[in-house]
Length: 444
Image (cartoon, rainbow, N blue to C red; front, side):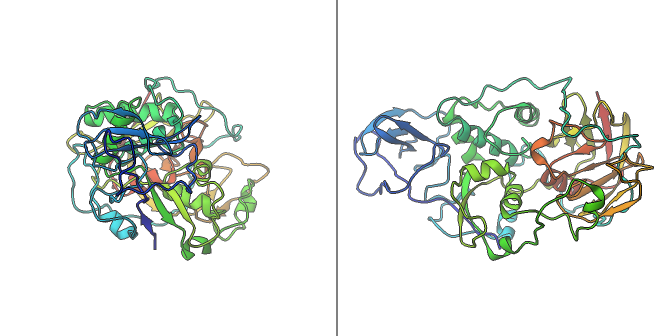
């Protein structure tokens, strides 16, 4: 069972007192890393910023002396709020005291910002097997890691700057993810995936997020569920796996494995919380991911979207998938890898044929590309590190589909072999929103 809890030990400051109130507790023994939201390192030592009782951002030095006060903008968050969930404030938007945790079921039951999309009961049926081929016939596999070039990139986003830029960028990514607008892996970095997500967010909501304004980010976080960062306790189930020692590159060797499982706990948890594995380790320096009871900082990305979609746009020029409901409203948007110059994706309008979760992958060099020296048909077992990740959404055009990936950080950045590739978590969300007959239109 997952154990999530808000981060605690907040310092709540009066606006102009010049000292820490008696009711607050300063914890100088705790080391706040450089990427901790609202941390600043100056000559006077650690400087912390908090929201006071009147919604103002108050900055104090380690001795409790007020350094600066910033007036709030619209709709100030609750007193004690910070970008990271350290207040005695439920990160899901309900006051309830510090500590405690939530099970996966409780998390899934929490409301998610509708962003104008209507909710409808019922989900499409899921086909949990797949034994067909998945790629367009090709004489040879292109060089791995070939960069993708967007021909219709989204406008660049003006992002945070200064010492807290990475944490504030991660907060922006969380805000987008909560709305169903995926920025890909959450890694605290701006780039094309964030740019296209911000553009889709504007299409969905008609609003721009001022990513250069920490107060605006803070307000948006609390309007959509609370702090960007919460605590997670590693469980016995997490460390028990099953895991594999390594994932070979050769398909014949892959076919010999019992499953295309995760290789380590940190990889599994990074995917669970939509994070880049390196960033998960960066914000948890020294954490022992193999020990149950270890407390981690993770991103609170909220619950999955549940509004069924009737139309999907596969935007080749932007390397993005956008899905719409029956009223034509944008429901979700995901960064994607859509084919490559060597193995282009199809054109025109096709439909969803069926959905497979955790599918086998059948490699057939006469139908697929040829991988290495493998000339025989191979069946590669299911798992998140399989060639199509943990999801296969078959299209009406034979051998093409929408699928996951074992390399989420490369989505929208390196080539695929003709299909539409998403992160595993985005592909699984989409799989529960579609049914047979949903149109998939490829646009340039």
